Image 1 (cartoon, helix red, strand yellow):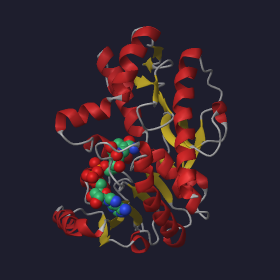
Image 2: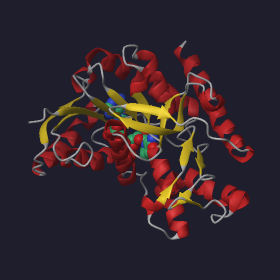
Image 3: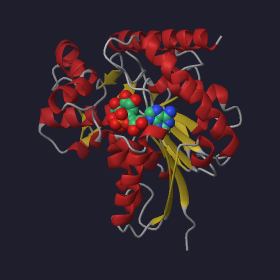
Image 4: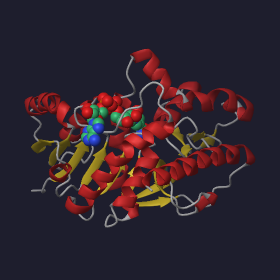
Length: 326
Ligand code: NAX
């Protein structure tokens, strides 16, 4: 028998978690042999709603769901966690500047970092989803000195999946025939969805997708503004697709992936990106939590402009966060 893996999910009564928890309980992330213990964290006002989610998890009668803990105490939620999915964050309200959002989220991620550092498994793998995800991950890393930097990441797989899906839709091919795309930089509207090396069944398709001018005018903004388009249509932000992206991210990270995927990881200076920020790169997941930034890609002038812009935004976020910490 396989011993259960302990997965902590924060913001567990929210809408992304509502989709994610059933994927975790059903075995679609860690496989059909791997039992799962869920530790669910919420803020006190959301505990009654969380109790309802837990009722539903029990009513799902998932064979792999070993046990469920619900709490508002991070030290309980992170206890012995093998995986931590940090979805809970202070939401962006109308009229809020980036600095206001950082100011609200900094203490949340500082506190959770302390609890993770103290109580989680020493090998815990953390994915930050709550926005501003890259900079929240940076704050978390700063306050969790015992967790190796390489075990902390932020989610850009949703943007990656959106890019795959848009290439497939525009060329009317199955999504699994698409490869060679990646997301560079921040999970924000400056992100750079790079399709200059996109292939379908190993054949380059950048020209078929319109080449530089049309890609700049149409394709890139479609991905950058996809989140806003979903909000406009649905009245709520992406949840089903975000949960699916978290599941993909965790699966690739833990089990490895034959394909190149996108993850925001601590920059090691690759492609001239300064260390100290969490930057989305094309990565290879080797299995067992080992992630390598894909090196040696030749960056053309077109891509470089976008990569520089999203890097500048992350450096500015970093400076603002550091100023708030002083
Ligand atoms: P919801 O507002 O539905 O849920 C968030 C939940 O987090 C709420 O139940 C809230 O009570 C809880 N929460 C707030 N502060 C908390 C804290 N300190 N500890 C524990 N729980 C806390 O939002 P949802 O749609 O689920 O989105 C969650 C976050 O994901 C947002 O920050 C959102 O911006 C971000 N997203 C990030 C994406 C990415 O690709 N990185 C894509 C999807 C999503 O927009």
